Each structure stands twice: as structure tokens, then as C-alpha cells.
Image (tube, rainbow over all chains, first blue to last red):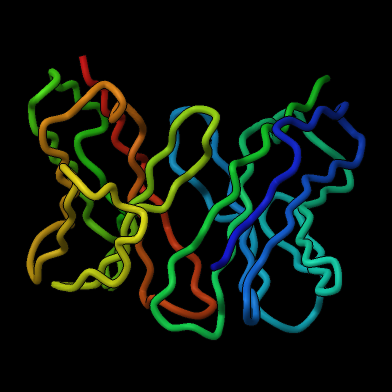
Length: 115
Length: 115
């Protein structure tokens, strides 16, 4: 069965500093990996995805993520954090080789960026 | 192109009543997913449907919960005889196909409160 772990409930960074939100996954086949962001009382917004190819994926709002197959990780990064990046971030995985599978989400990591 | 539409946004039910949550997927999307979000628990997969078919209901509670996605009309998540523990935010997502590299698009959610 596929699963996702986000080991940190909360990440605190100062504005202008780089940020990393961690994600590790477990699938039996090839993974399709996604990051979403949720602002208070809103639905989830898609940020970026890894399907195949370059291990460094660039997405919305200056975010990027690095796929590391040997470490089964897909950490979200941004070189310079903004206060407006403060939100709840979810990593998700789908087993790419299987038809009819749903996205499975981690528990989420709250990012807090201080000014 | 309207996004995923969920209604109502807020729903209050007394214990023992029925709750019906509706989800209209994005135009052209034939796959719908329902998730439940509880504080401290993240986003839990409930059920994955195509038109007139349940593909994966492994996350659905065995009793009182059901879902459908008819040929015409929205997808419905039905909770019978609600209890306080059903209070949560319920999110619907849709995608144009079920497998592969497509991300799912989320609605704003329905916040169910059982009193």
C-alpha cells in the first residue's frame, strides 16, 4: 500500500531565509508525487508534481521540490520565504503504474514564516 | 471553466440526522475523490468514483457512509444518522482521468458540524 510521511508538524522560518518541508513516501512501483498548499478555510491548491525526468521540479509561487529515489523523499523547498507562504502544506503520492488509484496525502506540515 | 463546486459550504446537523454533501467536478472531469479532514489527522482518503462506478472505497467507514456519482448530476456523499465524531471538513477533488500524471483539483470543502 502506498503511504506518505511528513515528519514535521510545524516548520518555522524567518522571512528571506530558505525553507524546506520534508516528505518521504512508500510505494511498490513508480511514484507520482505532488505538493499542495492549503490556506485557512480553503481547499487545497496544487503547487507542483514529479512524474518522471528531472529530479528537480519547479512549481507555483517560487516553490520547487527535489525527488530523491534512493532516499524515497520529495522535499519541498523555496530559496527565500515570504510571510504570505505561511500555510498548511501537504505531500501526496499516487502509484504511477497502477490504474485507478487515488492520491494519498500526508498529515500536513504547518509552515510559519515570521517577519 | 468553473472549478470544483461543493455545496453547502457549511452544514449543521443534529445527531441522528442525515447529511448530504454535493460535489460537481470540473467540466470534462469524470473522476471524483472524497477526503475528510480532521484537526491533527490531515487529509484522509475516503472514496474514489467514476461516473456510475465506485473504484475504491477502502477509506469509507463500513456503516452510515455512502457515495455515488450518477451519470447525470453531482457526486453525493451521504452520512446517515450522524454523530458528533462526523464533524469535519469534507473535500471533494476531481481529475480528468484516474491514473497517471494528472493532479486532482479540489473544491472549497463542506464543513459539517454535528450538534
